[in-house]
Length: 304
Image 1 (tube, rainbow, N blue to C red):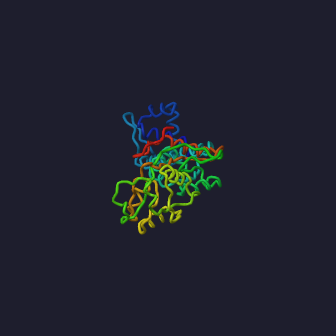
Image 2: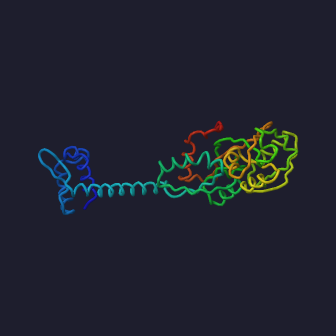
Image 3: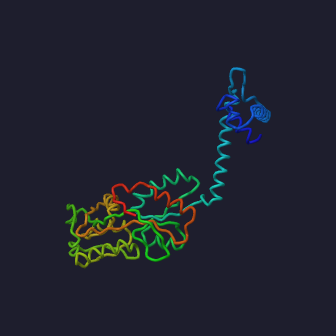
């Protein structure tokens, strides 16, 4: 049984007309008839019943059509997969991301990747910015979605979106019922912050807003886990910090309240980042899907 005989049979099964099937395959009609005969001898059953008035599949042909179609489709898929591999467009890409990227960027990008590059697998690693950049240097991730443009010539990046920061307080905190708080009011509140190495852009945005306000922050706790910050803020009269995205989605689950900060409004930029000179074909495919996504819903995209 030859592969071309299967393709010829499927053309006949779909057209139910030898002349149209032969034209579709760019074959002479006698050659098509000969291929069908050879296939039927190989199968050991008549597949097509032909009279001067009609062409139809026999019961055996009806059953054989589904199996033949599956074989032909699988063969074409195998060939496509081989071409993708030869061009460096198959395999797995490791993607680092933070909470905001997971909520607003990745769903659309992963959908596009699956639709356009089904042979490419994507493995996700949720981390804060500092650990993501360490993983990028170590080769554990191929691209990273981080806050802030990484410093140094070893990285390249593109901006994706900008998000405000909010205060995170417990339901019994005096700020809990307020729509917002001036940043200068933090001078009188004990705060929770993380080590700068965890997320330099957010850390600097917070301290930059404090400098603009002319205040010194009172850091009572240093906690690197964002979930632990929310839990601590839910039970103690302290103020934590989070992106507005995390504040909206996480606070409700641990009984904390996001409070908008203003005068000034601290903001952070979300970037997609990769190592300079390390643009693999898979990384390029992923970046193309990121670039073509819709604007982040509910947020203002940066002007690039």
